[in-house]
Image (cartoon, rainbow, N blue to C red; front, side, top):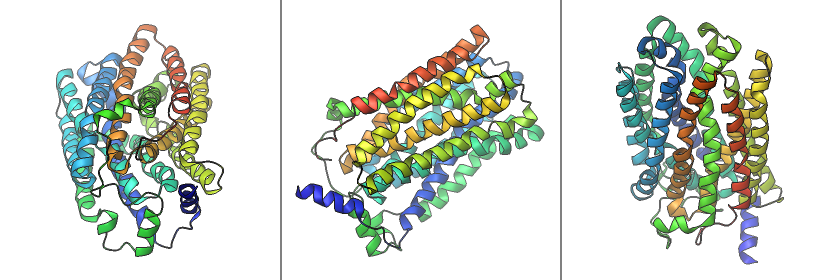
Length: 434
């Protein structure tokens, strides 16, 4: 009863005037945008790359799958390394290395060299989201983590949203190679700012004592202290909740990877959108993703603030409801014919998928002990991308063999909806000591 009283007190405590923690979220948002610019630029460059290098839809899908598989495999060591070396150090090196891999892509002249560049990109980008989850656990109390995560996880939608108009403007006069050189350079500039401005809460030069106390009132401010968990890294796989997160995130990533790799091509092939207009039309659905990520986090915070439910249940419910609705929307998508209806359903689908993602990335802070948030986040992301890595390749093969996106989207919608089963029925209890 005493523990519950403390939790309720923390959940209802009014936030102090200090807002330094939200500045940290802004840094993570910018880093996430850079991250997704460097992985989504392939979908924008794909039409021109296919012409110049004689690539097929299957080749584009293969590059997406190679990236995702490498990204998945590197999640496990990246989470472990983040928990031991610290998020700032690992995050900074990751940005520097993936920016170099992005620039390298612009110098490629055949499929094999492109695949090698995507392997490097996947390995270097792996620490970004687990690192951000670790930083969020340090800077926010539990009740605010879904909202904070929603803001920086929206980067995965801001990237594709702002990429089409900006990068199409580069491709038309300069060609697709300039796209990769410029986005790689942007990452180098960002990492300099991150190294200078980011600090842990206890070491931040302008963080007030009141705001630090508020952060610590519900589990924040401890993610990178010398607090060790009695749970070993390998034993994490013994917990039912961890497996629910692995399987559930696989369902989310399967569908999201199809959108990341094929949304521009889908609009060009099914709606006859020209390259000139692609910059505008391909960005519209991702705005829905931005809104969904933030709104989903806000709703979970509201449910906790009003005492309606606990932090964990609020996140699980958000993921489950949005998964079912996203699945229905995606299955409906191939059956509409107008551009307006297509853009509307794409926007709704990405909004729902994004609400799932923000709550899923906030869960490690609730499920894991403070010293293992990065590890659990990495394991969840590993599960998602290890299985989801196949979706771009499978989708590309389906499109090449059938000449239609219908089967790829229908199967993807069914898989996305299955995330509700995993997060609601399997993810229930936090790990011992969390």
